[in-house]
Image (cartoon, rainbow, N blue to C red; front, top):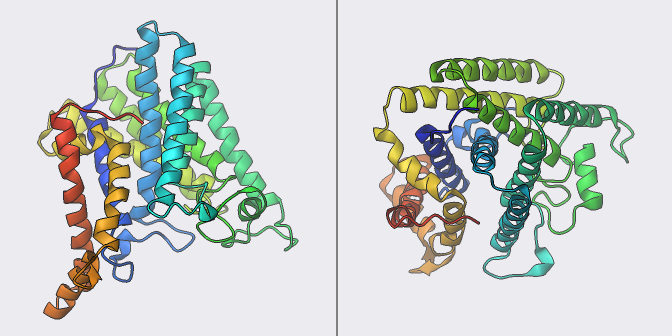
Length: 364
């Protein structure tokens, strides 16, 4: 492994991904959204479907870079294990608290969720990194993806008597309905459910493998070429796999993992080339600011939803007033909804910028 030099491109990639996550989660109204800002209804892929797997990929890359540095500094694994588990529990707990906020009705608590999945993927991936070599990690990822594919394609859904991949009628949904406690996003199943978390771990491992490549002792330009090439092959494998196991974010199919990890790897390779090799860093600052407190900013954005979407001003919430203005002026309603999301991102940039300027970096 070579000495690690911090990648500006990775920090910016993380921040822009969080900003995109906030944007697609916070339109003025779900009734008026540009098609690329919607999730695919079931099978398929939109730009919005890339955001969550991109972030998990970045988590994986960061694990390799951060823990390689700590191991090289002679830090013992015992304290690292404790910190990994405690951090994972904190992220998981915050995810549940955000769901409960502001009413805290524990009868409708949702155990699954975005932060909860991030917590699980981080914990499993980090523990794997500390105890295995990259080849073992690659084998585990392959076993998870192939095993998940076989489970989904060979085990009939109880009650139907045949293999099904339709919404709420597949084996992953059945497992959620039987074993996942609490409220589920789709009533009887959850897109961040139990079985689909296994291929999500493979998404995290794919980022770890990219991190290994970034740290290997070869010239940086060759690293970029190898990363881009291997990521392209992953994308191609996922593309052809999708003909027999469709791209689907809701059940996090194996083809979805390969395609999104391939795209994430190619994006990172291109970013390293432009930012870290060519030195074009001017546009990276907003991403670095968001990325320096990525999870904290995501949490703050969820909390800010209360005044932006719930509190009444003059008889209606702020987002309703915003859309009424666009309707009265005869302007595009889709653009009105998009501009509200952009305003929401700009508002959340303020606390992110303050934390960055004061060198406060919140690690959940």
